[in-house]
Length: 254
Image 1 (tube, rainbow, N blue to C red):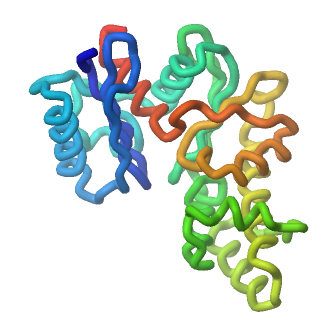
Image 2: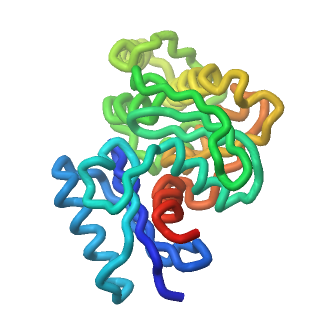
């Protein structure tokens, strides 16, 4: 089935793009590290999608922190797009937790993907995916090995610092003290999960929980969130594409 719209989610860490058909199904997608020259990057990705799909013109919706720098027909908030994308994927009401590179969002989703309420952390990296990214780079742990390494932990080393910069120094000290890498990683996941759970607060009480964002691909993070929230969140299909999907749906006739 031919594509009818393109959605862009220009995040601080990665650029996600999808093309959808008339049923709202994703027929093509792209996930790439976000380039500082967002205008050029989004233009190149859109052109590549059009060429792949054999079309010359499609309406474009854009969301994410760099949405205003993308050439789009419609610019939309992340909250709106994530709620719509998640509801389209799941078809049920509940609370979506999205842990992004720059911020974390907790959204209570209503009928049709409407936003009933939300909470957002965009003031400090300690409650976002950037928290893990910075410290993992310092520990020289590849992203592909994070979950398997953390899952080997027989105990959790608490990370007490509430600031990413101070937490990085704390982790370096723990390594110097001979603490096992897997126990430190387990502590990092627990620290991030506790901050996200605090953000979720009343919104998550008694509601089905869903998880999106690149962090949702990390099964150790899913497990840590389950422990912090007292309930395991359901990972949305293609969790990195939820915002882009919502943007595409919003700009289409669906």
